[in-house]
Length: 121
Image 1 (cartoon, rainbow, N blue to C red):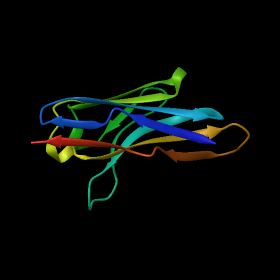
Image 2 (image 1 turned 90 degrees about the vertical axis):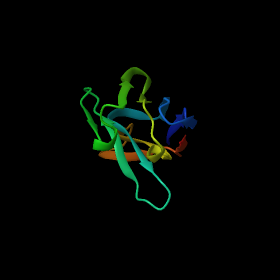
Image 3 (image 1 turned 30 degrees about the horizontal axis):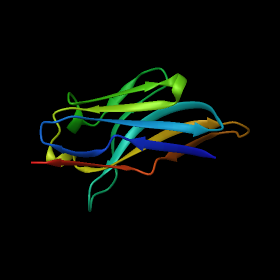
């Protein structure tokens, strides 16, 4: 069994910062890509940022220059530093990991339970 546990969400004023963390645990052999997605009310879930185990990153255009994704491979942890937050960043943020599990073949995709980020104007 694999768990992804997010933390760091909350309420912040526009222009403020938050740092999200996500720790993966379980019978993990290797994690390839880790990332963050978000879903605002009445909208589809969208990619925010992803990072490979080699450190290559990809960001949504809407967050480029404001958000920074990073990871600690030794601790199976991914971070999202969010600066210059805007009200339109308000959403539930979900951690995502693509990994190989011990005793299984093939890559599997796992999601965290989500953490609420609310940015007030």
